Length: 297
Image 1 (spheres, rainbow, N blue to C red):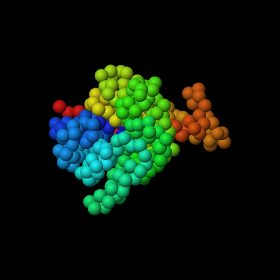
Image 2 (image 1 turned 90 degrees about the vertical axis):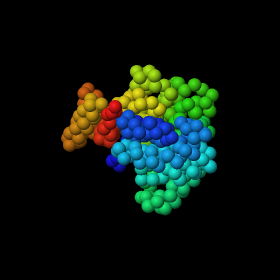
Image 3 (image 1 turned 135 degrees about the vertical axis):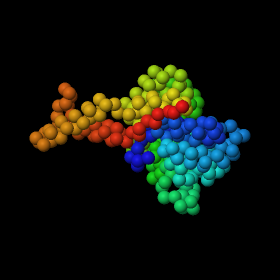
Image 4 (image 1 turned 45 degrees about the vertical axis):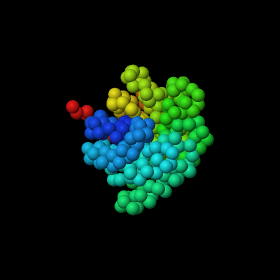
């Protein structure tokens, strides 16, 4: 994985189910999330935790980055973190984060484990899952809590339950934007989309939601079914026309600058500095997008 890569699609895989782990790398996702939380029954938490290191090695060995979603409360999370920190795990997903103190405690534990295990300091990144209305006032503190923080994402199902609402786009757009704005203020990646992660049966509707998410500024998302992977990869990747438009706009602006002008016209629209900044970001995302792996049978 290149340092500038952006994970457009992160597929949940239950860590205790060997047949899912064995095929995880072939699903086309930019990264896989080995799940120790919701995808694992309580009676199998210990066996999933014992399996996570080998599962991460298997998936990462095929070139697919691995994340691990740990549990809450802290008693379970601490054991999960101890089991997960390794060369094969690129990041942890922290569920139900309501305050920065939780992140600080996790980061300190990772600091010690990385030192003990000979890993580069900062090897393990973090993604915070925002799943409760109680977290909203603390979004900035969470986003800025540690240099390990890679991004944040709203957990639509749990968040909607905490808010007493249905996980529909009309209700989820505002809290998703609040998470996105906090990410932008902190300089970390905004993940997510204004919809339910459980809606994978209607590919067309899901694609429309992802297109909206991309326009809102999100760069990738979690998914629970392989059918969602190609939709995320396509929806969060700049199209060929997007790239051509960005290059043309930048070229027109740079030509105008050489003539002493602060704006240019391109495709019948004004191009000034904010437009150029967006165009350059489009090109950066196009370069950072990982090639989609083809599923093998």
